[in-house]
Amino acid sequence: MTATASDAPVRAAGLRTRSGNAMQRTRTAILDAALDCLATQGVRRTTMTDLATAGGVAKATLYNHFRTKDDVLAAIVDAQVASLAEACRVVAAEVGLAAALEHAAESLAGIAALRRIADEEPALLAALAAPGDGRGWESARTSVAAVLAAGAATAGEAEVELVLRWLVSQLHWPAGPATAGLLVGSLAAPGSSAGKGAEASGLGWPPGSARLRTTHDHERR
Image (cartoon, rainbow, N blue to C red; front, side, top):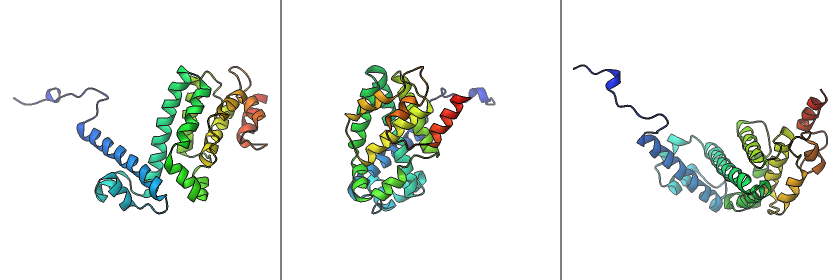
């Protein structure tokens, strides 16, 4: 009997193949090991050979997932942002925004790799942690907006930018979770004009910020 397309096994939508799951596990293991490696050696002294050894994979396997060390670093940042954002979103919804930001501050302070880079390679951290308009930063802004919304706070452009800049400041100079309450108090309440509370706080916002000008110009129209 001739087989037809309908005779082929059907996999439920959304389920990954075993090979796909294995690749994801390998990728996750590499990133976890890379984070430990960076905490031990710093960024500049860490090589792709070091990352392969730390991850317990062949170098060829590492290159199957990441072409360069910069690709590994970008993937670490993406994974850490996604994980922290989801945790903070849950805390914001269940406990409150201040608690979520406190959790974020404590989590960032607890990443040994970041602390080593901040201590030994501050110029590198400054270059990596300067908010911009790239894909990674837009993803971070989307995550911040989700946390603000979960905490019943205004998630306008100005508020998102303020929280993002506060988080970046924790990378350079961890102030601890105590400042989270002050930050929440500076945010605009739902329904108020976006950016008023953020602008008044003065936290990381130079006068004439392009993002604030854009927001205020839009309001005047």
